[in-house]
Amino acid sequence: FFRDDPAMAQGLGNPMGNLFIPTKQCPVLYLDWETRAETHTRRLAMLSNGIGYGLTNLPVITYRREYRPIADDVVQIKAWVRDQGIKLVIVDSLGPASGGEQEKADATIRAMGAIRSLGADVTSLVVSHMTQTHAEQSNGTSRPFGSIYVGAMARKLWEVRRSSHNGAGYVD
Image 1 (cartoon, one colour):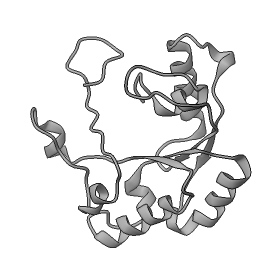
Image 2 (tube, one colour):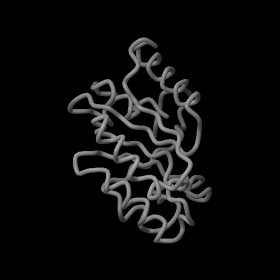
Image 3 (tube, helix red, strand yellow):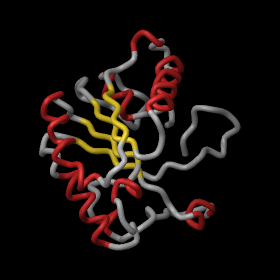
Image 4 (cartoon, one colour):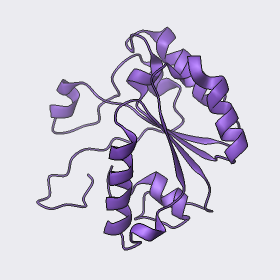
């Protein structure tokens, strides 16, 4: 998580920095293959408190711990999206969500296809990782780990790196 967290911005319906400026407040679904609900809740509370909203004004972000590949669970996820009026789905992260060898096209295409099938009016933000080599390079852009389809099937790619500034709250 970083200061300009899209789930916080969309859930609260307020801009956060210049990077994420929502047009309206909407329900958010956070699909998590990497941590637990307690970790998610703690991070959300820290973000909310850190931007001055306090712990009583947490945005509505539905958390769902995931274990199976997204393509194998997409029918159930679609039902959640429909029943709760979800408009933003965050996938954390593509590697485990793909359920296969991320370097191979079929696992990535299957996962990205499942994400796209959630609905034309549903925005998705998919977290992906980069290789250690790309993470250590000091200039230029890198690409997400895995098949070329990670980038090819995304509409927009953002690269977020740890800040070289001495202080919290910065994203390069």
